[in-house]
Length: 69
Image 1 (tube, rainbow, N blue to C red):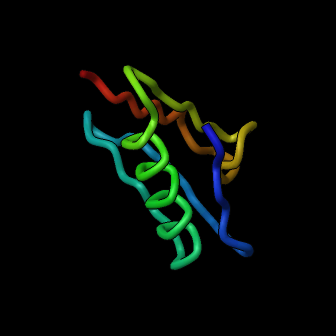
Image 2 (spheres, rainbow, N blue to C red):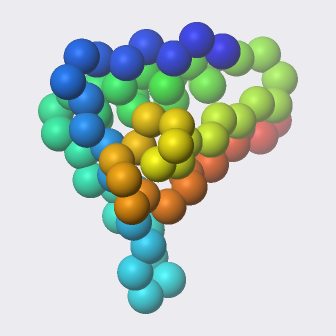
């Protein structure tokens, strides 16, 4: 799966009281939308992981998005 990042993206995922918050600038939201579209178009079951060591802002928790068929 190919990820298409928009230049200047900022994307953070935090957890608080059992909830998850995704915070992003415009470029971050567009990038996440690109990833979701790529996942939707991937044949079969697929998923992606993002964390602070892989594209998310420092202090972010891991984000796993999975497509089920």
